[in-house]
Structures are given as structure tokens and as C-alpha cells.
Image 1 (tube, rainbow, N blue to C red):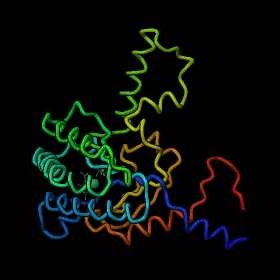
Image 2 (image 1 turned 45 degrees about the vertical axis):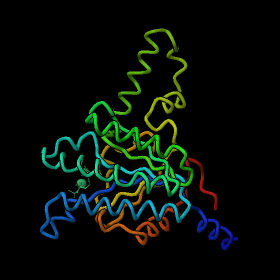
Image 3 (image 1 turned 90 degrees about the horizontal axis):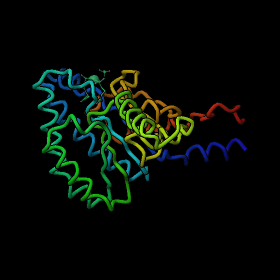
Image 4 (image 1 turned 90 degrees about the vertical axis):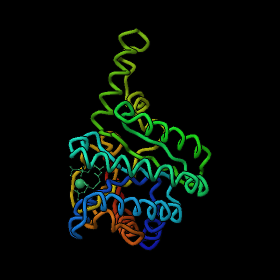
Length: 245
Ligand code: IPE
Ligand code: IPE
Ligand code: MG
């Protein structure tokens, strides 16, 4: 009986993994390099992670690339991050497409440069048929900002009489969020040892399992993902119910 349960646990691959990719700056500092070098190394870790997710049969990967609060960083760092984003999105697009990856974005688009918006829509169009892994990049994303935007849109519909306040339920709110087309994350991994969400997927992550990996993001690799999955598989997701034992 116990053996059967254990093998079921072992086989359990989360459908949706979300990652707070943290520690690029510390990785660079440890090497006496500029922070931008850490972000660049972080982009390589993203590549490795995409490959690992495909190999493992994970359906959805969401990565936190730039938060709505990251604008508070020095202008030079923000420029470096946006530059890297432009570079990688353009360079990787055919690779992503070839590997069956469908790319999408969450976050407030109104704050982003017009050329970045164009690259984003191009990437979405080009990869729309990808059916192996759905990758969502959280860019200018903040959970509170996302909820504010959703509430504004609901408020407008109420003010114009299109919906009644009584019609508001969890499904209606979920359908107004940037993540309306993707399932809730099963597992949220944060690297670098910090143990907080930093405004990531607050609504969607209500029942996600959290794993805090002690590794800095540029060093994250297959072994670290395997370790996070091992940890996930040991968890008992109860959703408020009584444990089955
Ligand atoms: C994560 O690494 C990347 C972004 C937030 C864009 P950090 O840049 O936050 O690295 P640390 O936390 O300063 O080490
Ligand atoms: C969270 O990391 C945002 C991203 C990984 C993009 P931060 O480094 O910005 O978070 P705090 O400031 O440590 O909470
Ligand atoms: Mg950080």
C-alpha cells in the first residue's frame, strides 16, 4: 500500500511550474562582475530550464523576468535588462518555435517600450502553434497591479450595467487576470534563498507548493529542478481537506 503511494508520488510531475529567478546580481558580485553579467548568465539558465521542462514533460512554465517594482532599480540596470530581453527574444524565437514552445506574456504592457511590444507580439504569433511547452514570461508584472487592472475592468462593466455585482465570483475574477488562459501554478520555485513571493502570482498561487532553492539563478540547472520536483512530490496537497493516510 505504502509502496504504491510512493510510486504515485514519484510519477507526479507538476503541470505548471512557475519560477522567481532571483540572485543574478549576487552571482555577478561574487565574481567581481557588473550586475548585467549576472543577468546575461541568468538568460542562459532560462535556456537550460526550458530544455529540462520539455524533457520532463512539464506543460507550463512561467518565469518572473521583470516585476512592476523593478523600475525602482538604477536606470542603467533597467536599460540592461530591457536590452537583454530584446536580444534574447529576437535571437531565440526560431529555436523556441522549432522546439514546440508557445510563448506568452503576463504583466502590464502599457509600461513597455513600443519596440519591445512589437517583439512580444511577433514572438506570440510565431510560436502560437507550439504544443510541447507553454512558456509565460512575467514582464512588468506585479500581482497587485494585475488585480487592480482586473478590478478596473470589472468596475467598468458594472458601471455600464453589463454585469451585476452579484455575478462576481472566483471564476469571473480569474477570467479577468492576465493568466486567464493558463492554469494555476502547482509549484512555485524561488532561487537565491530569499523566501518571499515579491508580488508574484498572488491569486493564482493560492494553493501552489513553494520551494526555495538555495542556488543563485545563473547556477540553476537540471539537478536543481530535479531537487525541487523531488521536494514537490513529497508534499501532500490537501486544499483544506483532511489528510488521506
Ligand atoms: C533577479 O536577480 C533578476 C531580476 C529581478 C530582474 P536580481 O537582479 O534580483 O539579483 P539579486 O537579488 O540582486 O542577487
Ligand atoms: C523578484 O525579484 C522579481 C524577479 C525575479 C523578476 P526581486 O529581486 O526584484 O525581489 P525582491 O526585491 O528581493 O523582493
Ligand atoms: Mg533579487
